[in-house]
Length: 402
Ligand SMILES: Cc1ncc(COP(=O)(O)O)c(C=O)c1O
Figure (spheres, rainbow, N blue to C red):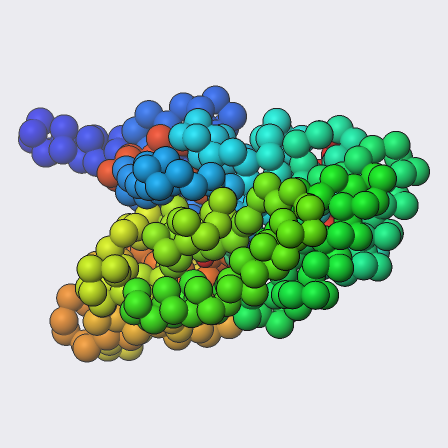
């Protein structure tokens, strides 16, 4: 073997040995925060990857927008479940976060995030007690109620714990899943909360989930206005009745440039990552694509079987929350099928940019909340290089201990 060839083989062997060592070492790299030389290629799959440049652009755009229109920002945690992300939002001026579950509330509050607003009422003793315990430790914590019974039970639990719980009344805004009907019924709950010794009435919430994904900005605006009109009317009724409505909260990624002027604070979450549904809702400019925010989150997968023309099997299926409505980064021609718990299929016109065994394929997820919930961490990528890993926490059924 001539020396040039020996050098070449040696270099290759060293490179693959290094790659193997890097993959095996990901866990210790996390502990040491030593990401030197680690690229997307080295990551275990399936895994979630955040493109940090796009992500920060999204975060900055939202923060700047809220500042410029005078809207407070309390971004929704259900999308990401990450303390690292909440801290970044706070550093850009967010007044707190919104959360869907007691576990998320505990996670955020116990991690030092101030201004946590629980957007699902804590019904039942177990939830009520957890919420009262958070309020006891964290005077900036707020919960919603939409029911006189809930207000009474929360008041009792708060009284027993000798704490006053900040309370916002949730008003139906088009979704039948939650919220008291606006008008007289909502006013009654607000008045009840306001007179209770152990509750501190702070205002109203109206989340129009139906507006968030309405296609076309004008149609979205019309839907959002229709859905939150009842809350705005109730706010006026509250004021006339002498109640101090300091907070009017709601809104989403789809309505962030519709809500200012109506709401005092915004709960948008998906804007930081975007998903395959949101990207199609259309911009204020009239563009069919929602151009305001970029798709910064992908699921990295590997082609593990290449037996048939025009199809490849990847290592991501139901457990990785693969959906036929996911899309492939850089390959809009590729269709996705689910093939069970650990398998997914890519389908394309055979012969046209065929995939090879071992190829890495990045997917844009469809439903962020359920996708991110399935993974332990986000790998943070700058270009191709991995620069950090942020844990996903606050899972359902796992109370975060202090
Ligand atoms: C109550 C509430 N507020 C805000 C949001 C955030 O909406 P988006 O992720 O569409 O910005 C959600 C999402 O489902 C929600 O349930």
